[in-house]
Image (tube, rainbow, N blue to C red):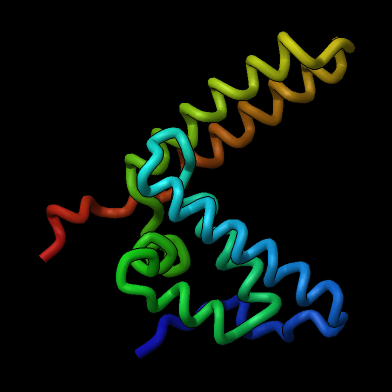
Length: 142
């Protein structure tokens, strides 16, 4: 039985351009997520969740494909069902935040308000990820 996604209860976007834009963004996110499987610094789960969100509003077929996929589906289903994301995904995502944000803050942001805003965003995202439920380890599932 396919997982029921609350986002699917809403209607898809009706604007054709926006629908195709969401589909394109979804597939770019899927491609990035697949790259993340092989490159440890590319966050797999957040990109797949972005793809699921894009597909939920634009294409029921692509959303179903992603959620039911043998390899990618479990990462998305755990989050959508409320079970959370794997601890490794949390660690990689938080690590990437604290590698990329300080670089942006100290190298590119010139104004103090922008530095403070970037730091606040980094802290906010970190707290959000920290308090998300953590999915059980695949090795411990029966």
